Image 1: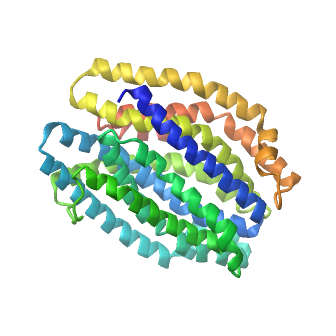
Image 2: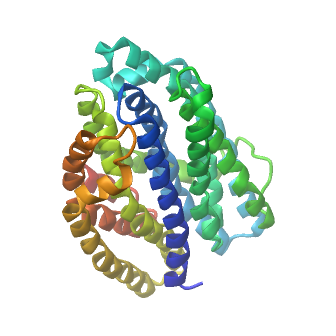
Image 3: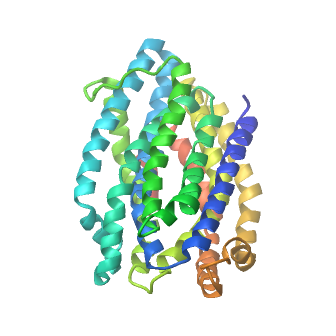
Length: 389
């Protein structure tokens, strides 16, 4: 499958997911508005999502895909299966321990990610309670990312790209039909996140099974391939954390402001994430296995052509998207969210942050596309240095 066709497939699936994501947010805005309860949920959801981007879609995928591609190119199929088996077992074991500790330490995490909530005991307690429900999502979605990386390496891009649709379908259903049954309706959304994590993992497993590579996971830290992945992950975790922590500062600051501030940032960020996900992440997802393969084949000319091709598309799509979001921020927010509990004041507050976010969109997309050029060469240190700058 050509890179353009693969990008189109991933982009189409991601577009479907993002459209449903907008529908989900429209439902949230209409049913819950922007208030203390939604602030609490968005923080409780953002913490495992932050770690998902850091580990699953960040450091782990960046380290795992190049090593898996090398095994696929130069080793026997049995060795590839063993690598996947031991990587899955080790990842699951580590994340299970992290999940248990996080559930026990939910109030501490809430203080770290939303220190402004400390002065509002009701909102603080609600956030910590929902975090105990949402945090296991990290375990399920990280294993889902592993399965998706395997499928991507074997050219099955559509299934991993479609998987996030399940999250949106579950949360829309919960908001409309399950939440009214709860004493505190917003808590139902936290349970929806938990269920969606399980659903996404179960959806991908049969497709990995069809490749003949799915075996019962086993702890395998001593295995050479797993240790290589771990060594590559360490600088990648630091590099990813630099970028992700920068994105957290706005939420931390907003936690000190009036109720609804976290929600306003959430809705504006969602509109920036739409073109970033549909195009930037889709393109990065497709070129990483391709670049890894060209590096494994020792073909620098083809490697360079692939990266140049991707950057041309970044300029072609990213620049108009950036201008469009900045100029049409108000009308977009009114059209999508100005219903029910989400009033004109909420629209104006969200518009201000959306204009600011949109100015960095082209840079965000370019970084998503350039980073795989380093990770494909198993260089996870250079992006760390760039991230610090």
